[in-house]
Image (tube, rainbow, N blue to C red; front, top):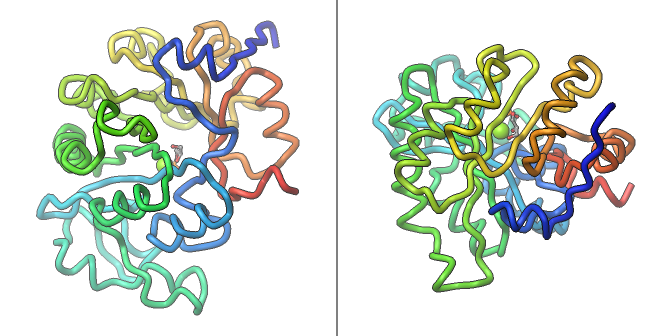
Length: 268
Ligand code: G3P
Ligand code: MG
């Protein structure tokens, strides 16, 4: 590795990034509770997480929900597409039984309910805009409309930091920049999504991103990119890191935070 950048949180803050902890609970506490559910958020908070990441997409009828996949089957056991299912039907589905019997009846959360839990528990949040194909702009618009109605303004409550808005989709982040420029934006780059790697630096500048969030697989599969990320000067975050030795390597390179399914990773 040619470049090792020692980001401090203070430096990151000067660049407009929020104060971020070492660990951000991925989809809540995905290793210990069904991902992207309210119980997953509570579990992360119970384990001492300071920040969580959740995925936001739209039901067919345009309600913002917390869910990762385009298809329903992995989480709910029911076949079908989120984009073809109304909220009234989505909220009846079980989103916990796939994880274990003790989470039967856990539901897909509406974004409003997830944000209420996040605020009640004093968590910071990274909202990943995860649009179904073709709904990149609409998902960002509806999500940000919901968030801006619920999330307190920094001037009103200095303990509450603005949400960090991220996406693999440049169009979604462009919409975030237009609608809520005061919310920091993180661009997500994946080793297996060509679009995110193409002209990433020009995109990052155009989108006025605050942070860069890269797949930890860049460490082993595309080291050249990692050098570019380190040299670009953005505060860096990396996903999804469930092994302490990989987290250590990333922190030593200058990565500020890692997304982890295990909010207790540092205790291992
Ligand atoms: O935001 C970090 C990470 O969640 C991105 O990948 O597929 O887990 O949403 P994914
Ligand atoms: Mg995500």
